Image (cartoon, rainbow, N blue to C red; front, side, top):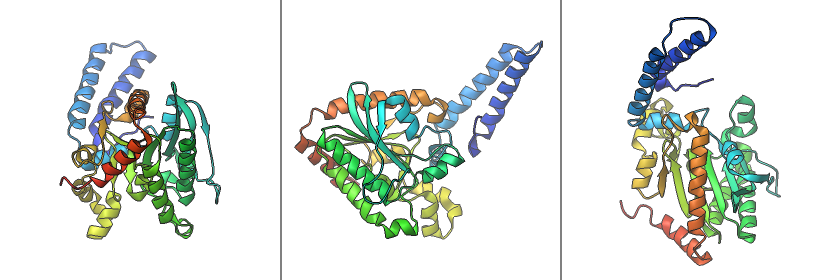
Length: 317
């Protein structure tokens, strides 16, 4: 079933009419012309081109959160051969908000780690909507150190509204786990590549994104706090989330300009959710090129360039 965002009402009406005409044409003898359908398809294409080239920050936030947007599990299933999931932090337990394991992207062995939000009510609850507990970040540390031991590149996929803020998570050292995960990512002797595929929220995102190369999908967002949380802090009103989003510089274009990310990966027209396989294939191709590039660097160069990259942030403002 097609899911439309609030600002896509006009598109839903056009495409609804297209589906209706196609169903009538296929189910009975009638005089519906393919020209009529083609004209509507042209209107749909024109609407997408016009709207998606001029999205506001709040509209991009909605696209980044689209329920049909490909998630970590979708990328892993399509991109990787022989993906073996590795579970548990060896300290407390398993956290399903972060999934990680070993696999191959064609000829490259990789350690793939990422937030998983889930795609329906059951899986969203199972994965806690992508909000990790300390165990998730400690598991990530364990897997990153394992990859380092065998000289395997680390690839992380970021898609979280933020780390889980529950009492239990805080009691078990949430902030400490995030800090240690960030430090581990910065100090790895192997290539580290991070891609923000949806939301990159707060420390829960940076814990997996202190990488040699940080990429964002065109309509993803990366922020110190969600627009809703920021609006609550600034104006005591989460209803002003739209205003907060516009002022926070959270889009891929904003962050590329600020030097926080390295590259924007274009999405299919209408967002990654409209052509998921195309988007995943594009990401796979880009990852292969980046692994080949980073494999040319020594351990010392990888660590130094990674640290320098983050120390420079803010110096050119």
